[in-house]
Length: 549
Image (cartoon, rainbow, N blue to C red; front, side, top):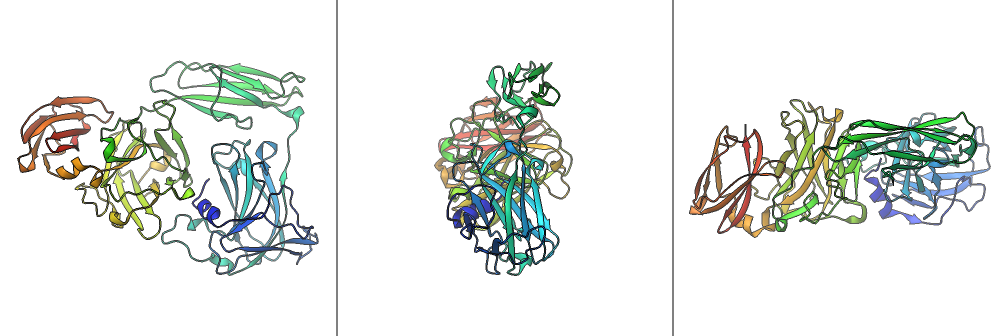
């Protein structure tokens, strides 16, 4: 699981050299490759040469009171695998602490694949004043497929996970009180045996290698365009093909949803392993937004007229998070959170902040297959430093199951005129957005028990658009929600030249040219739900939200 501390690590790291595992400290020149956050270390004589560590020299780690809470150190081989999980998922080391129940985080990062994954493992060293042998098995972490390669292994002594994303930020090292810790014998446990290798070297769907294939990952989910009923054909090649009894037996999926299985036999003729490919039908793509591109700062969308700023990476808070391509266009147009407390879009890494002071509204679309009354999501905008946070709790419409809900939240201090407005720092000071958080584990909400989709995340309005700015909030709509008609009036005798109404899937459902400043819009023939009406006048155009129930 990737964490916000990755930025802080990168900003304050001092590199020394590359190295490989196993690492001991019998050579007096051996030390970690880097340290950060005010932590110090040195190669010293073992202060407690008793079992299980009687070696002569060890690493001394000094985390003083003045150190940052996230301070730590690490080992690395730049551009080459320091740890290859395909050879074994366990990492061992010996640790000595003077403080009972010392929390320690270890991390695999700087992976050699494009995914930019990082995985954290939190543990507690219970016994003080004695060497402890620690074994960390990364195979147990969500998202680890067992075949990744990483160039860095990082250790955070006396690390408090509660400090991640804390506001205000943690300013102390916690309960360590400037303690000295000791480390020795960092190693990876190698378990690979070719004769018992029942893995695949390739796994294909309709002749093309499955996206994200790794021989150590045995379960895959392939998402197919909404409406697909016929499953593709699956194929596989054994890693030890041609050796002994190595073979692959395939059972194809009967439909969508459905699963194909590949039973792989190792060269010894007895060891077997099963790969499973699950086919699922994607939800429909989020509605195509109608906001003019000149009026938008787009984070992620399925509108090709927008230029998305994207996100450095998605951080999950105990959940599983992925970017998805719902319209199969080749580019992500939404992202998901399953379980846990949701997560955040992180712009701190690489300092790729962006400015929303010229915008008035945050928009996003929400989708879930399961909702209950009271389900809600807390949306938080986190600035870089002084601006602080803006937050708003969205109460979701539990009747809109299996369809996209359109959500607009006015930015604090922007004068958006929206009913829903963020609380917190004034938007005029929000020139560096660092995080956009979607927190699902809220009081009264069942969202952690389901998968949610979020798409069309963008900022609009405010001084970004001269047309919207000129029109301001000069449309009165009543009643809204309505059972049948909306009465719309433009202020200052502005003539409404045209109205185009779109449903939540982006389909135009109504179009008229009233050429009047007062319009009666008949929605009696429309289904209940949320609609977007693009209002055009001689002064410009503006999109307003209409609700029918």
